[in-house]
Length: 321
Image (cartoon, rainbow, N blue to C red; front, side, top):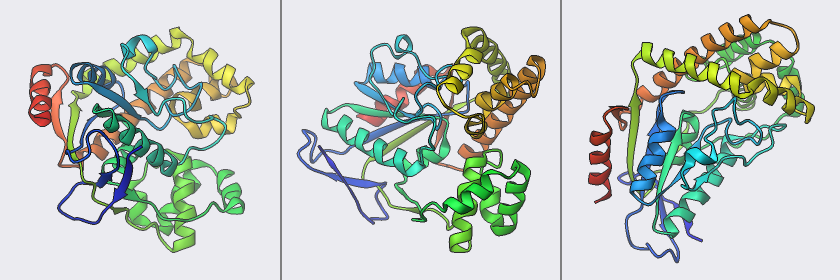
């Protein structure tokens, strides 16, 4: 096992690696493929992994959960084409999987992949997860406040938004305000520390290539619509019903967001099927817009259209020389 040792060298980009890896003494390399939902990043990551001895690490905050398959758009065994995939199905959907747990598991996966002289391909749309890995973000150590959490979790989404905005305007501007779980955690930290501190980053000693999938808005919306209809036909409603029968509460489903939130509302007869599809598609579009906004802040990302596969391959080849 290779040990990740975090350093504070501002000229490097992350955690230095020491240990008995066959690659000890060589520069580690990490490729990141990111983009909004339905942009085609998963297929691209598999293509790159096949060509360059890669293994994929998922960076999706819902695909970590077992049983959230169709609704989260989780890659299938067939679509993997034999490429190893990490950080899928590693948590129970009944309990919250914190970003710190993801970071720990992702760092372990990186070390394992490098120890085999393979190339890790970090792929996903959850910017917070990607940032935790590529920047070695150090998160504030604030233990859960069960009493406060119980109180906050009973509040409507708009009240949580107002509460965080009042407590910490800076964090409110950055956070996904449609995600009640993130809002609750931010309020919890702000209540304990006075505000949510800006993330500290520990530079990591590996070479990094970040490829972003650039998308035309109208075409992306078409892909979102087609993908949603396809997944409904594949049994997305039955998947959510099964999760509930297995003990995932409607309240928990609400906090999982997007497909699980609106399908749960439909199954509880709070909305009809037409309302469910319309509201869900609107919310997925908003989510894609938030993802694009998050990624645009990072000037390290090299943007390509999905059709520009030859340009992407050239970029990867140059990086891996």
